[in-house]
Length: 126
Image (tube, rainbow, N blue to C red; front, side):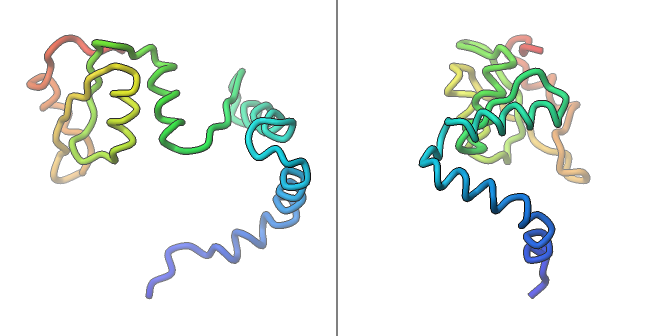
C-alpha cells in the first residue's frame, strides 16, 4: 500500500485548534447554522479576502451556489468537460441551464479548448 496522505500528522497539527471548536458545536446542538456556523463564514471569508462567505453541507451544494452566483440561469449553456463528476452537471441543470460537453486534451487531461467552438450552440454566459 502506498500512503498518499499522512492524516495522523495532519490531525496532530490541527488537533488543539479543531477539537475545541468541534466540542463547542456538539455542545450547542446547532450542527447547521447557529453561532459557530456564522463565525466560520465570517472568519473564512476574511481569510480568503472575500466580503461574504456561505457554509454549505456539501461540495454539490457549493457547486450549485457557485453556478448561481455566476448568474447562470434557465436557457443558458455551460461548457464543461465530458468526464466530470455528476455534481458538476447537477449544479448546471438545477440552475436551469444546459451542460455542453467538451472532450479533454489526451495529453493534458484538461478541457480541449479548440473543441469548444465546435460545441457552441449559442454564446455561453461569461
